[in-house]
Every structure is written in structure tokens, then in C-alpha cells.
Amino acid sequence: MPFAQVIWFVKLLILVFVGGLAAIIAHRLLTGQINTTGLFYGTKKDGTKYFSPERVQLMVFTLGTAMFYLSSVTQNRTSGVLPDVPTETLVLLGGSHAIYLGGKAYMMLFKKNGKGD
Amino acid sequence: MLLLMQAAQTAPQWTERWVSSLSAWVALGFLGLVGVAILYYVFTGKIDLSGLISEPTGDASMSRFQLLVFTFVIAASLFLIIASATPPAFPPNIPNGILVLLGISSSSYLVSKGIQQSSPEGLSGRGPQVTIKTNSNQTTFGGAPVQCQADVVGLNDKTVTWAIDPIGFGAIDNAGKYTPPPNGQPTTVTVTATSNEDVSVSDKETIKVS
Image (cartoon, rainbow over all chains, first blue to last red; front, side, top):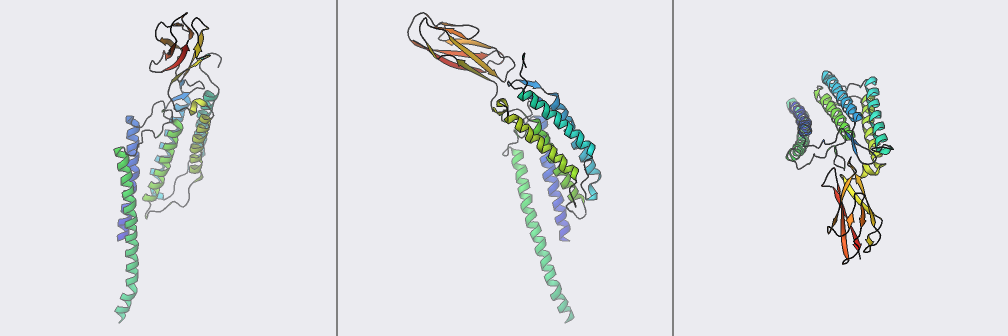
């Protein structure tokens, strides 16, 4: 059955490419070969850097949502249907992004370092 | 006779089947080679991923990071769903929740870039910088002092240390005010402002004394 082999090869191709790329990117992020300097730092209007809690919370919500969705996909992978993302998750993620963008806009456009901010 | 007729009918079906199969293998072989080449180039560094989530300033960007994560997760999920079904098949529809998720992620990235474009600091592709400004680039022996000002960008400590070359040809105080000597040969003095936080960050300006 030639097409059974084609299907097997397609699965292998997807696994090797997506898995390989994900593994390389994850490894380089963790070892610093992909630059992560200043990931949790923002820039004020006068150019100074500051530790940014809004970036930390966005990282937490991003990774949490991503892992939650991936676990949902792996549990329903044979269904042939992409699982939906719950509305509550979308609201939380939207709120997290709003905090991040609001904080970034305030600090970059209005906030200066020192007195007279 | 009957057997010959049956054979004549089944032959085109087999030919069609083998042609389809061969086409599939050729297409897959090509895609496989492209995929392996991309992975090879990424692995060997010929495709440089070091700045994958970096800004022009050199700092990593959270908006780029979250876009990378969600794009990868949704793409990997789609591949997984397609490959796990028997036979492999594209999902009948893409749920609205996924479209909203990707919309939030992408629009957040775009708004973040918009905020950066609105700020000169966000646009600069430079690191910490000291820039000297003067009210004049020339003076006379025993003449008016020249006031220098150092603008420090990208560092928390905005103070600088002032120096002149040649040393002793006039004087410069901590506020950047250069006082020329009362007499001497016409000389071009180089004023240097060096950041106190990072001594590798400095700027030079010349003042002609005649």
C-alpha cells in the first residue's frame, strides 16, 4: 500500500521538522545563544532601564496559556479537531497584555528617571 | 477474451495510482530536503537565530517572545492534529478562540512596536551614549569661558568626568565650564566627557583657542 508509506513519511517529516526546530530554539534560549538580555527590563523616556514586573506577569501568562493549550491538544489529538481556547483564558491573557502595554506606554512615553517625573 | 478486457480496464487505474504515488514521493522528498536543509543551517548557525527576539537596541523583547511562543504552539498543535488523525486530515474548522488568541498576540506586538516608534529612545539602535553640547566651539586667550553640557542616555548615573587635552591648557570644572588660559599659542583643545557609571562611554568635542 504505497500511500500508507507516504502518510508515515509525512508524519515523520512533521515530527522531525517541528520537533527539531522547537528543540533547537528552546536549547538556545536556555543557553543564551538566542539573546535574552533585558527580557524583563523596560526603557524609560530618558533611556534608563528598569526592572519591569509587567513583563514578568506577561511571561507567566504566556507560558501558562501555551502549556495549557498544548496539554489540551495532546489529550484530544486523535479527534481530528483543534480544541477551542476557553473564553476565561482569553480574557486573562488579554488583561495581561493590556497591563504590559499600559505599563510600557506609561514608562516609555511619560515616565522619566529621578525628580520631576 | 474476458480476462483481456478486465486487464485493459485495470491497467489505467494502476498507472494512475502509481503516478499519484510517485508525485507524492517527489513532493515529499522536496519538502523533506528543504526541512532538513533549514534545520541544518539553523543548527550550524548559517541561519542566525541569536537575534530572534531582540530589538535593534540589542535588548530582548517580551512582545517578540510571546508572539514566537504562540505562533509555535498553534502551528505545532495544528501539525499534531493533522498527523494524528487516521487518515491525516486538516481540521474541519479553526475555532474562534484560536483566532482571538493569535489576534491578541499579534496586535499586542504591533501596539508595542507603535509605542516604541513614538519614543526617540525606543527608536535608537544604540547603547548607552554621552553627547557633548557647547555654547561655542571657539574662544580667545583670557576670553569668555565655554560652557559644555553632557547628555547621558541609557545609563542611570547621568554624571560625567570632564577632561581636556592638552592637559593644563586652561581648565575645566566639574560643571563642564572650560576657561581658556590667559595667553599662549593658538591651540585646539579636546574636551572629553566620560560617564562615571561606564567609563567606556564618552564623547569628545573640540574648542579652538586663539
